[in-house]
Image (cartoon, rainbow, N blue to C red):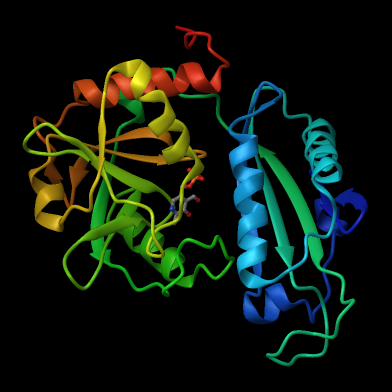
Length: 290
Ligand SMILES: Cc1ncc(COP(=O)(O)O)c(C=O)c1O
């Protein structure tokens, strides 16, 4: 069955869906995006993702092309038309539209481009141990507004490719002061050498992850406290536990950093507990199936 894309009001087979050559997303990366995980018909953390989408648009002064209820209708329709029954992701991209190539904004009334696609994913991971993966570290070479989810992802693309070529899943990005910001497409958390659960506070230097926010809300029920305090590359290397969060990584244990094991090289107890808590959150309060 061919995949279906939504482009500016029309549902089309992916191969037939088109945007214009002068679309500013294509020319300048002048656009923003969102990724929402869908599990058995439930949009996970949808409210957070849609609020962040609206915020990103405001920050770069692109108008929302359709209202919130219409967008929610498109999301439901795209999941239906792509027959995503179990696990999948929805990709939403909005650009400043198509106009003669000039850096300045196009004339008022230029319609923003709205594209929505979806694809099936492997089922939510049942086993936290096999979900564990490795990362490498490298310099954070991004711009000064990483809190906006723009489609300008070249440094992230290069970081992720370097990780892949090193046999790792992600790259933890390190700023010029030697502090870890986040990963190329996820937030990063540690249980530090003193046993404190830490992640970097929000600011212009990281994306405010929706999974990060959802997990932070689950902590009280888990009797865990979070210190939102930046940590250095040395802290990362000395951490007892490390994990990353994102809409499609969920809570993903990190057991190797630059080829060295984290702690004993096994998934630690806090990561295990948070993976289980997040999996209940994803499944709508039910325990993850065995
Ligand atoms: C740079 C970056 N940080 C963090 C995240 C995690 O955000 P979320 O949990 O909303 O998926 C992403 C997700 O794509 C990302 O690209």
